[in-house]
Amino acid sequence: MTATARGRLTRFAWLSIAAALATIALKTSAFAITGSVGLLSDAMESVVNLVAAVVALAALTVAARPADDTHHYGHGKAEYFSAAVEGAMILVAALLIVISAAERLIHPQALQSVGVGLAITALASVINLAVGLLLIRVGKQHRSITLEADGKHLMTDVWTSVGVIIGVALVWLTGWERLDPIIALCVGVNILWTGYHLVSRSTAGLMDAALPRADLMTIESVLERHRCDTVQFHALRTRESGHHRFVSVHVLVPGDWSVQRGHDLLEELEADIVDRLPGTTVETHLEPLEDPASWRDVELGPDRVSARPATPPSDEDEHTASSGGPA
Image (cartoon, rainbow, N blue to C red):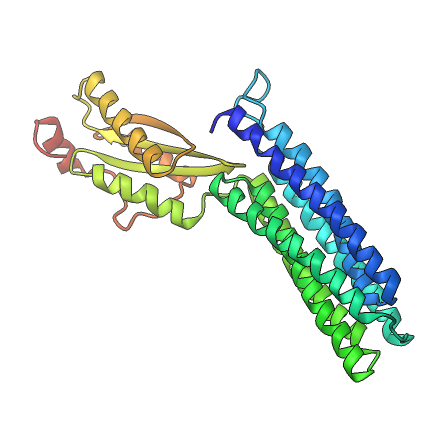
């Protein structure tokens, strides 16, 4: 994806900001009307959504910048900082919800004008649901962890609202005032779990974690199609930076191959990987199959998913290869 196309994703961050402003106004009104601690917690969650949306906009703006003299691999990792901030914001919101709910659990309070408050909250939830689903879809389509995290954040807000609506409605029907904070506590714990997963994912990206296993298996399937007696692979290493994937692999071929023949193989291999995994930068290193030194870099700790790992040639194999036979 070009930097220009990447920059267009910022319009979805603006949409998230608009949705956050609208839901803050609606949910604050609902709390003011009913006095429900659940609706108050829901409003606090929307404030966090606004802060997260602003952070997402900043991250997408930075990530859209092309590679430069000081950032040769681009600025894609800015998205991981955004996802980490959003995860942390979710955790803060959950803690605030738990604290408010615990206080109201100790000191219950009667609710007012519940029907109007629930209707307002339901409208806010519909807005968050529509925008959240859109952000998740676009985020996955363009491999933007920022938009996907922002969408998931909105979806947690939807679930918060659903739990709060159920709780407030039950309080209204049963008169059991402590049910309101109990529902809010349950929702707060669920949000804590979501925030933990967002922080974990962003941390893995900042630590240059390997690509997901599905991507690794895709790469291995490409290598397997090219693997034969005279072509082997090892030292497969991968990482991702925002939406971009990076793959490195060593290719071992007979030492008497011409430079052109080896180059053609590498070009075909790289094109096949990019075709299966768009947005991937592939780096290959060509080595002579018969040279034992070519196999020593296996000890560097490659990402291996092969069911048939390459092994150094024996003395007999080296003799056969040097005499022109299959290696």
